[in-house]
Image (tube, rainbow, N blue to C red; front, side, top):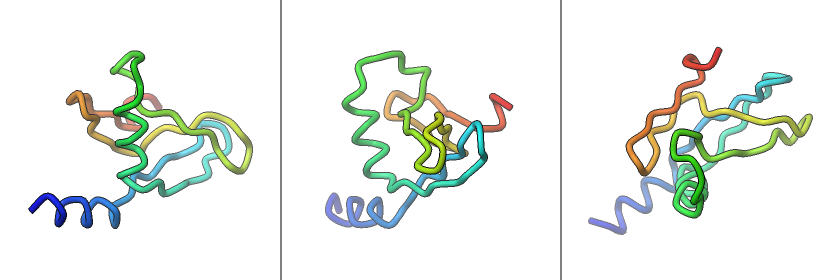
Length: 77
């Protein structure tokens, strides 16, 4: 069961949107969760990534974090 869950997560992505240029990047859910697990900072802030196009911060379109927080782009716009 666990191996099926990991395989499924590898195929899932979290859409991140650049807050400046509005580029969209699909980041594998497993990578987002790894960053989330390693982050000892404020759990109310989602895992952070920089836009490959312009270098500015990106925000997840929707992501439910490991600590139960839900991050929605619509909440900050």
